[in-house]
Length: 216
Image (spheres, rainbow, N blue to C red):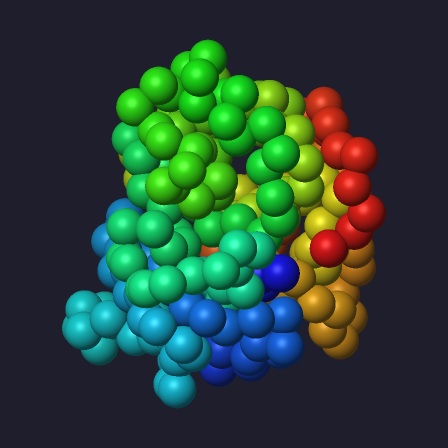
């Protein structure tokens, strides 16, 4: 299993990230972004020992800054840490971190992304490609289980969604996490939520879910 988390408060985001570590922490990833469209990504083997904080944050007001995290518990044996094969994944205008299993990964590669080798690449890497090709409704093409955060580098919008994976949020504060936390609710399955001004979560739209799996 993996875990995702986010908050506009650095300490809260790191606390939520750490609450996911019992789900696995072979590797970790983070993105810190602000309303001006600046962002910084960090990936590491194992777990982060302190909150992510890019250098530019110290030169701007912290209002509008948002912290996104991922902790990875691989579903297959991992021989080495590669930045290119760990979350978050980038493609086109999207960056995505994912918890779950894309069971039709090989089929999607064959139909839409023949350059991807299912024997080499991690299934999660197909999600930003699907979003780049089909938009948010591309989530309907994913079979299996998902809980994601997805940041669009063109529109500067951040989204979260789930299907058969846990994802909790405090919609009034803009915090979310794979594990339950104080004042959080389980988000609706098949709903796509948008993080507004990095401090509030609203339901944007829905997508058709396809999953034969239990909750992860």
